[in-house]
Length: 324
Image (tube, rainbow, N blue to C red; front, side):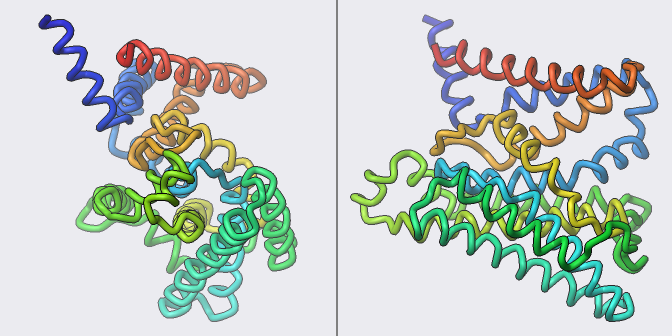
C-alpha cells in the first residue's frame, strides 16, 4: 500500500511538472561537466554556456507554444535569421545609437509576430499540414533574409552587444535575462491562453464543441512563437555581434529536440515551456561535455547526437516506468 501511494504521488507530480526528469538530467550533466573539467562550474564558464545557448532556449520556448496545439513550426530558425539581419541593418543605417537599438528591437519583435501570423494563417486559416506549410514559409523567409543581407558578417553596433555581454552590479547581464525569462514563463503558465492552447492540443474537435475558437487559438500560438523567435534573434545578435542570414537554419531541429527533451508531447495537450528551456540547456551541456571529454573533432557530432538520443530515451523510459 505505501509503495502504491508513493507511486501515485510520483505520477501526479510528473503530470503536474513534466520537466522533472529533464531537470534531473540537467543536474547530472552539470556534475559530469564538473568532473570532466572543474573550471566548467565557475561563474565565467556558466555565463559562457548561457550566453551561447540562450538563443536556443528562447527558440525552444517558441516552438513549445505551437506544439501545445499539436502543431509544429519549421520556420523558427528562419524567423530568427530575418530578425537578426533586419535589426543589424537598421541599427547600422541609423548610426547605432541607443534610439536606433530600441527602434531595431521593436521592429524585430514586429517582424517576428508578422511571420508568426503568416504561419498561423497558412496552417490554421488555410488548413494546410503544419510540417509542410512551415517548411515552405521557412524557405520564403530565408529568401527575404538573404535579400536583406546577402553576405554574412555585418557587425552589430557595440551599443547592442555590450548590453548582452556586459555586467550590472558585477553580475553578468545574461543571468538577469534568464531570471526575467523564468518569471515570464511562470506568468504565462497561469494565463488562460496557455490553458486554451493545451485544450486544443488535447483534441480540436472537443475543444471546438466546448466553444473554443480553435482556429484563432492556433493562430495565437504561432504569433507567440514568432515573438519568442524574435527574442531568440536578440540573443544570437548579442552573442555573435553580427548579422547572418543563415544563422538560424541549424537551430530549428535543435529546438524540436529540446521541446521533446523537456517533456512536452509532440502530439500536443501536455508539456511545459520551462521544460523546453531545460531541454535547450541539456543540449548545450552535452556539447560542452563532449568537448571537455577530449573527443576528436571528427567524432564530436556523432557522439553528441548519440548522447542526445540516449538522454531522450532515458527520459522516456523514466516517464513510462512511473506511469505504469
